[in-house]
Length: 639
Image (cartoon, rainbow, N blue to C red):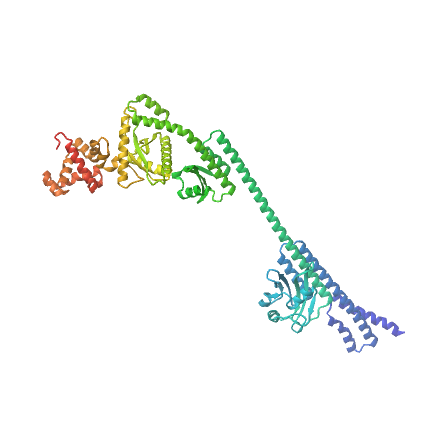
C-alpha cells in the first residue's frame, strides 16, 4: 500500500524536476543529471524508473518544441524572403539575403548560389556566404560538371556526404581545386527552376561530414524557388523598364518630329506669304530666324565663309561651319550670297531642309528682283551711254534722269573700265562670262548710286567717290568685288576723279579712255585681276592720262614743297634741285648754294617732313626729279 502511494509521488516529483529543465530550455546533457544523481545517491528503483520515464517524455517534448521553433524560424525566413521579393529593388540584395538565411537556418559553414551564363555556355558564382577562398568565389563551371551539373541535368536535389569520394558526378581539376581550397566535404545542391528550365543551383555545404535531413532539403528547395522567382521578377522588371524606356524614347522622337514638322509647316506658310506679298530677302531671314529659334542672316558672297559656301554650292545643301550653318543662294550658275544660321551646331535634318528651302525662296526673290532691276539697269546703261557718246545732251535733262536713278552727276565720280581675265572654253562661255560681269557691275552700280554699261568687250562703271577714298581704292575694291561675283579674275582701270558731269559730259568719255589705258597698262605689267588708277603709275601716269596733266603730276609729287616756299619765302625747291644735281651729297650741295652744311641738313629735313620719309627712295627720287624738271620748264623763263 505504501508502495502504491510512493510510486505516484516519485513520478510526480520526477516530472516536476524535468518540467523545470524544459522551462529553463536546458541542454540535452542536463536531462541526464537527475537520473545520474539519483543512482549516485542510491535512490529506490521506482524513483530511478520514474526519472527515466520523465526524462524520455521531457526529451520528446523538448524535441517537439525545437522542431516547432525551427519551423517557425524557417517560415519566418521564407516570409521575409517573400516580402523582399514583393518589394524587389535590388536583385543582388535579395539573392544575398536568401543565401544568408539558408546558411543560417541549416547551420552550414558555407552557402552559395550559381547561375547559368547562356552567352558563355557555362555557370558562374553569383553569391557566396561564409566562403574564405578567392578561387572558390570566382569559379566558373562548365555545363554538366561537378555536383551542380548533376543537379542541373536531373532537375532534382542532390546531396553528397563526402564530395571527393562521390563518383556520381563529373569531377574536374578546376572545381575540385576550388572545393579543396574552401575545405568543403558535405554539399547539398537544389535546382533553381523557371518553368522546365534550370537557371542555376542553390548550395549549402559543410567542412565536415554531415547528413542533410529531408526537411532541410525541402527548406533549401523553398529558398531556391524564391531565388528563381526573384530572378524571373528582376528579368521581367528589366524588360519592362527597357520597354518603357523605348516607349519614352519613341514618344520623345514623335514629339520632336511633330514639333519639327509643325515648324517646317509654319515656315512654309510664312515663306509662301512673303513671296505672294513681295517680301524681301531680309524678311525671309527674319521669318526663318523666328521659326528655328536662332539668328539667320543673308550675307553677300564675298562676306560668307569661302570654303563652306563652296561646299554648299557644290552639294546643293546647307553645310556646317563651326557652330553655324551656311546655305548658298544661287541663281543659275551665279553665286549671290548665303543664308547663315548662327549658333545651331546640331541642326535637325528637317530644320536643315527648312534652311535650304529658305535659301531657295531667297534665290527666287532675288531673281524676281533682278528681273525688275534689269529694266532699271538698262535705263542706267542708256544714261551712261548718253554721257559717253552724246555730248550735246541737255544738262538739266541729264540731272533729272540721274535723279530718278538716285545718282548725283554733280558730285565727284570715278570712271572704271573693267575686263574679264582668264581663258574661255568657247565663244558661248565667253559671252556668258561677259553677261555675268555686266550683271554684277550693274548690281554694284545700283547699290552704290552709280551707272554701268557694257562696252568694248567689257564693262564701264561710273561710281561716286566717297570722302577719304581715292581712285585707286575704288579700282581695287571693284576688282575684288566683281571677281568674287563672277568667279573669275577681273581687271579694273580707273580714271582720275571727274566732277560736274551733267554740264561737261565730254569728261566722261575722256575719263573712260584714261581708265582703259590704265587697264591696258595693268595687263602689260602682268597685274591681271588687279585694280589701279593713273596716279598709281607715277610719272608713267602722264603717258596714260588723256590730257597729260603735267600740273597735276607736279602738284601730287612736290606740291607741298612748292606751297611751303610760296608761303614762307624759303628755298626748299632750289635746295632740293641742287641736292639731286650734286649726286645727293650734302657737302657738295652746301658749296653749290654757298651755305653752311647744317643749313642744307635742316632744309632737307623739312623736305622729308613735307614729302614723307621715303622721298629719297630710288623710285620716289626719280619722280621728284622729273617733277622738279617739269616745274622748272613750266616756269616763266622755262629753265
